[in-house]
Image 1 (cartoon, protein in one colour):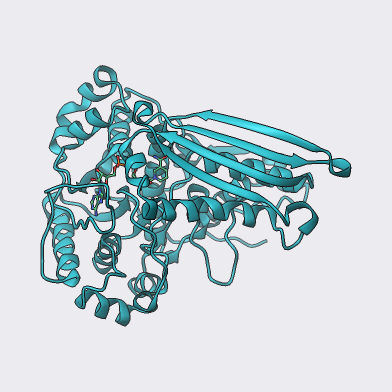
Image 2 (cartoon, rainbow, N blue to C red):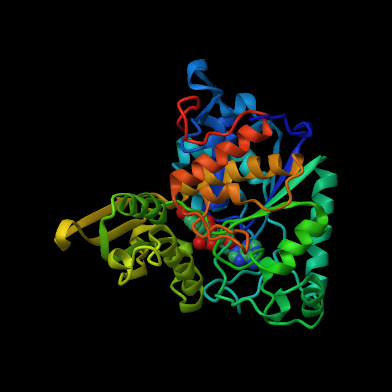
Amino acid sequence: METSKHHIEPAAGRLGVLTVGLGAVASTAIAGVELIKRGLAEPVGSLSQMGTIDLGKRTEDRVSLIRDIVPLAGLDDLVFGAWDPISDTAYDAALKCGVLDQYNHIEPIGAVLKEIEPMPAVFDQNYVRRLDGDNVKSAATKRELAEAIREDIRDFKATRSCDRMVMIWCASTEIFIEPGPAHQDLAAFEAAMDANDEAIPPSMLYAYAALSEGVPFINGAPNLTVDMPAMVELADRAGLPICGKDFKSGQTLLKTVLAPMLNARLLGLRGWYSTNILGNRDGEVLADRDSFRSKEVSKLGVLEHSLRPDLYPQLYGNVHHQVHINYYPPSGDNKEGWDNIDIFGWLGYPMQIKVNFLCRDSILAAPLVLDLILLTDLAHRAGLTGVQEWLSFYFKSPQHAQSAYPEHDLFVQQTNLKNMLRRLMGEEPVTHSGSDHHED
Ligand SMILES: NC(=O)c1ccc[n+]([C@@H]2O[C@H](COP(=O)([O-])OP(=O)(O)OC[C@H]3O[C@@H](n4cnc5c(N)ncnc54)[C@H](O)[C@@H]3O)[C@@H](O)[C@H]2O)c1
């Protein structure tokens, strides 16, 4: 197969990273980058920093660190800014959310974290009911609010001397919104902003502002945000990458490994009961029925696409899948993900799998934030526009082309991601089909 190296603009200069939301995930990601830059911690969990890639044919035995062959922005070139309705600096946010050890992981970089003060947010309690804050913008229309965000982006870029920018949604999960007429095309969306249509939550105003300012957008929560035709149209017109949605960090990460395993071995499934016990602010927000609905839809979609009940009705035609979230403050950010999986095998005999994942939510999400920032910036410099399906690896509910179903299998997603990197570097993709190629 003929391959040629894709043109990629060099990662020269500073990359401004604007996080919407400066809570547990954002502050843990930023603090981590600052510690890693100084050699005070290892980037555990980050494909862009620790991951390797096989190149060429099996006989060549060429393995490289991804960051050695792919021109990613360096950590020293990242400049962080944020918006949040709560005016805590990144230092205060990191202390309050209680993820990181104060003396080992916050104080050594305290001065840098204290400098990151959130800009006033576009925030509306109608979309995140269990949250309040006074660091907010006000304006007569949603369009004017979007314009105010655009001004923040331009100011940040100029005052912090950034060459490029990326925006990532690390803010609370908004209430569930069905795609409607206001989301179908850009003209309808802009008219809806002018009319203060309730179909336009704050997250869409941030995304609209980012894409209008030439800034790629990443959606880490299950909100609709850029997963609708109007935003895809805007991204395509502006020649910008977008991706989402909902970081795949804990329970769903496991689900997208276990479900494809059942499918691969043709083991049947009767039911999958998943519950989460968590006590952070995210858990508090998700205790609201309508925010939970966004999360529930995102978490539930996984099984259907992994198991393909349309192809295997005897095995997966009648699956009871439930997902629950229990807000329990003593747990803090230490989430317990508990799964009871009722499967059946040869001749229909029942068996059970129990999974008890005692995880740390933001510790799992932070490396995904870093990878997504660097890979989305790479996509931008490589001229990749619109929905970036190759980044599905990072998302619970991957945004995908309308003509295809979403890919949930973690290892298929990993292969797709690495094959895109191979293509960009003019290397042959792995096909898994012949002895000439490396298996991933
Ligand atoms: N931690 C994980 O493993 C994980 C996995 C998947 C998705 N997520 C999602 O990531 C998001 C962040 O999680 P977290 O644990 O950091 O939550 P968090 O509550 O600690 O932080 C969210 C922050 O967003 C701010 N916010 C809310 N609305 C805003 C707005 N309109 N503009 C600007 N800021 C706003 C809040 O004030 C808060 O500080 C949540 O939506 C969560 O569901 C997290």
